[in-house]
Image (cartoon, rainbow, N blue to C red; front, side, top):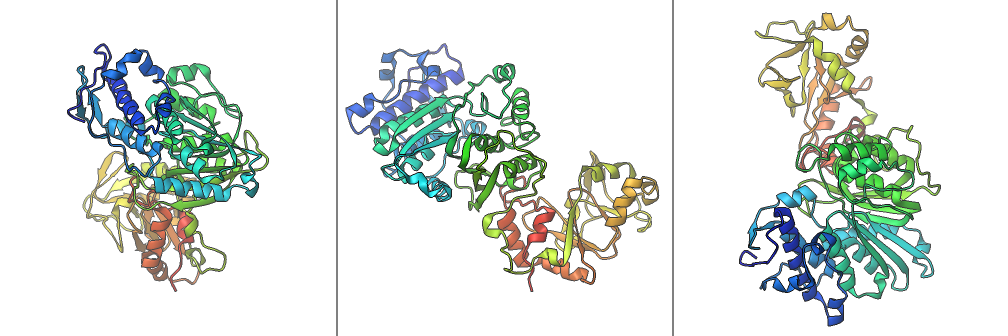
Length: 546
């Protein structure tokens, strides 16, 4: 690749040169996969973003590339072209067309981490298991959509898995013109009669007209991507949308996109919800009555605060059929993924009521069947505090500079960073609270009790309890035997039921059985793939060792 020279117009900027050069390589790779001259001739024309800069003869100017990273010869064209496209996103091209490596920054910006074949087959299999049996009737059209189709892996996988005689319509959308071209080329090269009718469109599946969603045309124009106007619902919406976290500038949404999604979703997609959450919302809206949604999403969606409106929307719109874990990081996206399978309610309301507030979701294999064994909620109650408690404590924090303040009048303030398995680091480790560093943070209880709301809260927290940290690799908890500590959000308080020794609760939370279950239940829901963020409800669902 580094020795390849591609003749591209020097008038283009770096992004334009890269797009044109990548298409030259992709088109050469696609032609090498064609089984017959007729297949090669049937390949789609260049994307508009490339066609406006190239004449028909320009393709012949691409220098020979000895080794194309086209993946395994046993894989369908979609996987092989996807492998090539991923490789090309790690290269830039200068004015002379010489290629040079740039690492994975472009792939991370686009969320372009395509799905391995075994995982595609697994997601497709779960989707088809959830579909009604009559969907195999060859006389009935099966409408399938992948709103972030990449090179078409899932569309090809569905076509291969459905009965050969069934009729299907495959629709794919991708915002990247090269990915959309690769998907179209892949389905042409597949040459299976099972592919049936297909349509690949280049544009933004999150932007455009869709029944039940607001569409602000001026905002859409400000976003700058090509809107996709949707007309018919689908029997199956499937895929692996981009995982784009909103805490870093490279992958965060523009202000226009954030405003558009907030308005289009009626407040479902707000705050720091991952881009994959927006695709899951859109996929549910695209599904027909009894239609299936089968998507790979980050596990953070299962429990994060910013995804709570999405979970409420999904539960008001569909049944959660299954949530399966995916071990490891199979497509190198840097987060822990899972598979969510949903079935749209028979009565398809375009704007379902969201009065019900959903709690965290758990993986299907960790859900405790009735009567299968006791759980922690049989011996204790877990409570997570909210922002009102967090900010309510702020005026009453004081520093115990010399360590002489009375424990009763000035309870210790415990943060997640001060909790280690079995003991507290209070007084030994500095912590940052409200942009200030503290060595021995305490709460002035006398002043706080003048605040009626906070006084009621404190009366429930100054009891013997176990404090559980969040954003950890396993369960990290410590016992407050005398009930003299106050937790700072998001620390979770676990209080034993009447007659239950505090030590039993601590032992149950600290045991291997609870720890293993917590990892299966919540791995990847924190800020990295290895971190868990248990909710209070999930703590109650942990198995109780007997």
